[in-house]
Image (cartoon, rainbow, N blue to C red):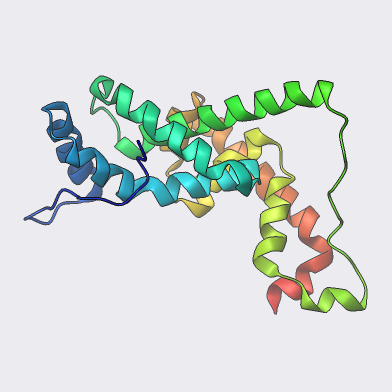
Length: 199
């Protein structure tokens, strides 16, 4: 079953905000309309994929983890309580799947020799052709997971501090502190490339 394949979708006859639309789709799914789940997937799959990619920095497993996320959502959707936005609940599942992947990767690294394939960004005359989006992405990858995830959710996906705190099971003040530290760390990592970033 390919849940990420675009198929028939549920159509809205009235304008609704995203939260209302998601709630309508979920309620219809719970009542037995499977078409609405495909609409949820199509609406949110790009956000999920982006979060996975930026959290892991590894494009190879984005499809597999995305599929795993939506399979979990499919089986757990009846448990959704309508107390928060669907995206907050969805991102919590996504973050947990990413953490599962990272845990497994750490375990594998104990038994598999580590090959350092990370190359430095580079300096000198060849740096003039730098790929800025890739530079920033790689800088984000260097952040610890507890700083990287809230930064991505806030600055890229636009979640509020409270939504991020609820999803990560911590206080708003802690999230603000982590995002501040993440931004400061990015400044340090990208400091040698400020000229290129401002170009």
